[in-house]
Image (spheres, rainbow, N blue to C red):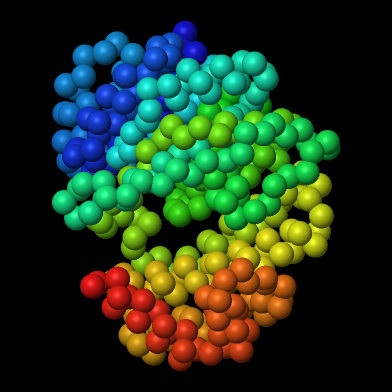
Length: 337
């Protein structure tokens, strides 16, 4: 039986999947299986996958059900002792499995968290900037160590593709991805992991290449429920922080940051991408966020770190609808230059 099962959902990634698969096959740690889940993809992703003649690759086809459903499908069929979820339009460094499995075995972990590299591409597909997103090199024990709550760490904790999980731990706690949920499916999954895990170790090295491409993606589309999802994310984070005995005052500040961040993202999402809302409907959309009970409850607790943060806080607190929308439109126009 393989030690690690790598689950790779695929949908419309024929341009990228070959590099993704090759980076898996190039791992210095070889005791793994690769489950490629073709999630009703209408392109040639399957044909590209079939060009790789490696017995460790298992190809599955299923009707399209979305990322969470494809990951669950792979999880149910995985044979490995450990699980690694990977996106099929990204790629990984050769020592990802070797280094992190060594850390898992040394500390008898149920999950390990590692860093990633954001590679920004231009329209031609060339990487024009790379930024390492590394956590501190620490191991935390629930009940003994204080949990870091800065935005950088919370962000790194959210993703599924920069972690390796023990499969028996996921099964014992019935942890799976929530089908039908977009944008926040990773943090909802991970929040359940953090609630149940007693030890959490961070590897400060970066292994995963997240490609930020100038092409339409799920993250770059208008989502009418984005603020609702941001609130769910906020509560999911709060639940696992509570399990780690983080002080209520700190958790309340995290909620405030989550509310403001959700509004800022949702307004940008509204004006930066195509949608069917009229100008009047767009303003009503923003107005509803400003009048939301959680916004009114937490805006006073929000601590701004920059002048821009402070400006957003004032505009939200005093419900400056017209100024917020004008700023969003201005940001949109500048992004086109």
